[in-house]
Length: 194
Image (cartoon, rainbow, N blue to C red; front, top):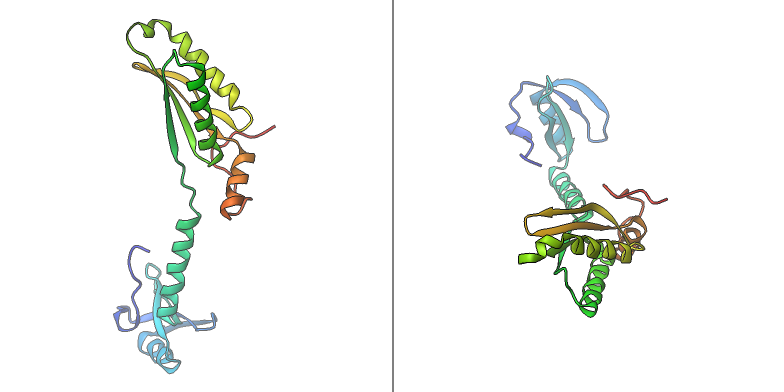
């Protein structure tokens, strides 16, 4: 919430559209009458729609209202998906064992639910043989096919060639199930699985 709603004597309009504590529409009443009704029930008069003419005010317990709004905001922040992009850097002439180690790390990142940016770094004359980097990225995409799909195809940026792998829907569902999040949420930007 950007700003606090006006309550009780801070409401400036002489007439308000009043909603009772139990949610019934009382109608347009003078501010003094609305304040009197709120005080009779030991509750607050809260301006819920300041832009309406006359403004809409509701009789409620303001402390309880603030508490429930804070809980809703906290829950919304918790439910937000945090997309993390990990980067794995390699050289075009990487050794077989080193490639295996890097591939295991990429697979672990994907299984944790992170996206992975695989980058091939070229030095000197290696730039003349970019097909080696392309082959390496294609090999990585093939090796990760069961748990990921290529979100952005290999492209060259200066001396680096990179592509982005994203975990597939089945894997994300498993990650969310382990984290205790609802699995039914659609994954934004994920490739549909056939």
